[in-house]
Length: 193
Image (tube, rainbow, N blue to C red; front, side, top):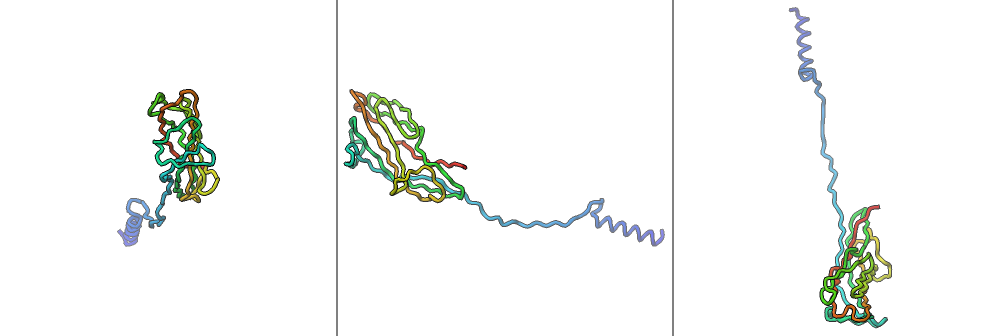
């Protein structure tokens, strides 16, 4: 074998080694971690302070009620429960509706109507057996502006909530009855545009 042939074979072998052996081509590569940062989520919450009761049966003459369980309503009476609720709304695109629990029904725990549940809609409870009527109002603290929708700009908003319960009946309807309104909920429900 002559020198030229040997040189050509050596050059071919070197080329195969550079190509990775069986004809594959080795390419450069590199990687770098991306410092994207942490993703944080927001908060939607509502909390309630202890409330107070008043007898508002005589317009313009409210009377404080220290223990509602000791107050005995008669037809024509109206009592009000007032409380402050604080909403936490944190989220760049967060929007929520303030609602009253649409599934709430008062429960009659004593008397001739015990165990009866009443139908209700979003703003009013009207159990016909005992003629209780419930209205609910919620306003931005210190204003007469109703609260319906809140956003991130309303974080730590204080809402004044008033629940008005009226009793109206004739004959012997609703006598010696206890109706529980303990589980009446105000909710904040996120909405998307």
